Image (cartoon, rainbow, N blue to C red):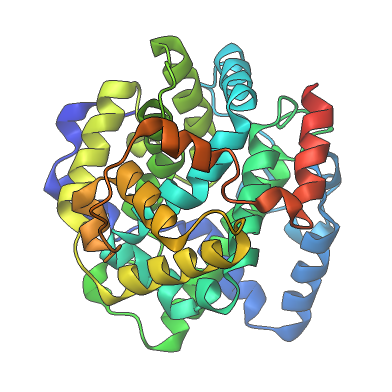
Length: 345
């Protein structure tokens, strides 16, 4: 784990040149042959929960990252992980709302990091599926049994790690990637994304009036550190406490948050989806207000989110978020939500 003093420009610039080398070699090797590519796709489609990660097919036995996919890092504190999961369960509905209203647009403000998603057009082609897929991953890794044999945390992390490597493969192969931005889905960008689902969510909850103790914050951050490790994030980008998490977030924000076509377009598509998916009593202006309140004017301006002269009052915002976004009526999100509630009841 890292400390505040080490988040220098030189340190973070070196992290922009690094992805997930072992997994990238694996993807490149298997994607070079249609037969091995199809076999890999077939195996991944069979992985539904942690128990289905073994036994491994013979051709993958020598892959260290796969054989270690169900091993927690040596520093993992199971008590803190349980407490982090408990914290999520207590705030699950609002955290899932913050996913789309805060975490994703926050990521889009990092112009270079947003370029991969922009180039792949995943969000533009199906914003609802993108949001639901991300939400399902969070259900999988936040469940109290996520890292037990009957859970889905290890399996989901491995599949996302492979998905990231595949996205790097296709992005580099497209010829559209500018190497001046670093490596696609690099270590620095992965660290920023991890913070957007942990530290930034905590900030969002506090903005909405929730009182969060130091221990609750530490436990939630620790659980996300474990998830980051399983996704291939290097140890020196996993923050040891709230202070170092704030320091890393600030360093990344200062380096990369700026106005960009890709950031504005991804945000526009996301807002357009929310406008079509939310109840009719929530206006487009309400969505703009809420996102601006959560992100702050500085980041909202970078994303070209329209400003409103209507004053913001917290009770009004809380009323809006009680129904927003209306994902629980979406399938398979509804199934995932109901399953999660049953397992945590």
